[in-house]
Length: 159
Ligand code: HEC
Ligand code: HEC
Ligand code: HEC
Picture (cartoon, rainbow, N blue to C red):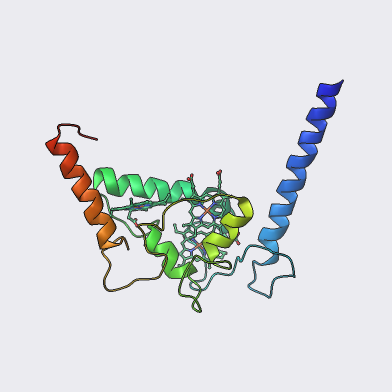
């Protein structure tokens, strides 16, 4: 009996969470002023539509970017459609010039969903900038990684 109560309670929680997320996702979608609740900022700033249908992106954007990263890092394939830089070019807030920050497109939703992907310690969170390489990665971060690879190669421990 206890187990059944627990399962029912869990199902209710999941349903409520799902509903809340959907409601939030829809509320800010048209870029109107959000209600006075800490909703994630869903405003997008450039372009008519996303690189994939919005509903698909909401659920699966991480798969697209992580796949893109693997293609680039391991196979040297470079395309722009799902590149992180491309996301940022459209989704950065023109006021802060960033997708991060309290109301930043990526960070506000991640804060809400309680996920913290660590991408911006190396990658720029801002639209295209001269001093950065093709993937918007900080040169110092790239140099650090290259140095690490050299150390590994010299010590015979390949990654
Ligand atoms: C330790 C530094 C570091 C971290 C942390 C990091 N990356 Fe990268 N990333 C790189 C480097 C270096 C490249 C290769 C850049 C190049 O070759 O142009 C790269 C390339 C990429 C690419 C392919 C280039 C592009 O923009 O299409 C994607 C996508 C990407 N990373 C996504 C991510 C995501 C998502 C995260 C967080 C989950 C992340 N990276 C975290 C260093 C990092
Ligand atoms: C050409 C500009 C453009 C690019 C590039 C772009 N987006 Fe979008 N994105 C939009 C627009 C406009 C919307 C609004 C919804 C739509 O497509 O109808 C959107 C919607 C979204 C949503 C859904 C937000 C919501 O309302 O729930 C997510 C998540 C998202 N984008 C993530 C990304 C990621 C991650 C990338 C990079 C792989 C990316 N976008 C690249 C313009 C862009
Ligand atoms: C609509 C809300 C929303 C928006 C907007 C959003 N994300 Fe996410 N993101 C999530 C959720 C929720 C997860 C965790 C999903 C999971 O774990 O299954 C996530 C996970 C990720 C992950 C995978 C983290 C990991 O370690 O597995 C990456 C990378 C990521 N998001 C990148 C971005 C980038 C870059 C942007 C902005 C261009 C962005 N997201 C915008 C909701 C969002």
